[in-house]
Image (cartoon, rainbow, N blue to C red; front, side, top):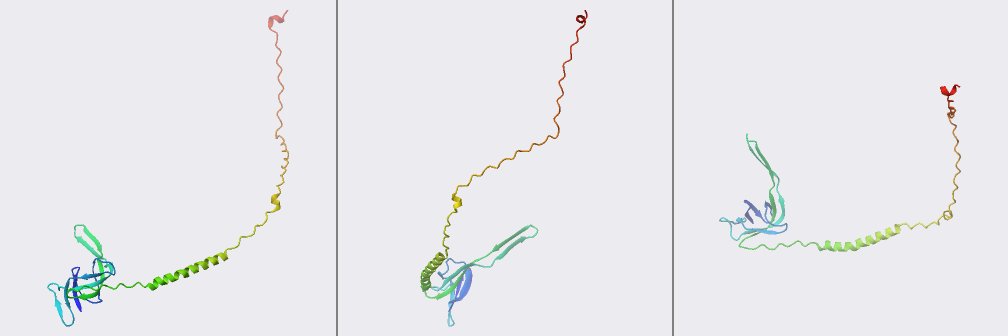
Length: 204
């Protein structure tokens, strides 16, 4: 069975378990959305063409992921005007997996959530005691590997005795340096000259 679906201004011919990539639709990964704009429904024996849509028909699809398309370059130019514009664009897209094609107003059946393997959780819980045992074994080996503190050696007896007072070294008398030049002899003091008698008193 197939259906022609219109979404995002485009038409897609889909069947169950088909994967299509359409322009962005609201929804998180794993959610089921219903596309109600069905233009045609049919199979190998008969087809129903909508006018413009088929009443009561819908397509249920599961959101696989929200993604973006390849980048395209938008370039504008006006000659002789010095006008150039370059822009990049990536269209936001949604990947869908078609789960059911419904006719006559039927509602989509609830999607069975994939049971998260409890074995993993149990395995994790089983791993905990193992990890704890490993940790305890590691701590024991570390404790064994720790070296024993070295025995304290008794302090030397010489250290207990008071240190002998050191006698100050006798200072040697400094050698008198011979004067390089002999001391200058003092000149003898000059005797004052005798005063000569003045004229009149000397003559008698």
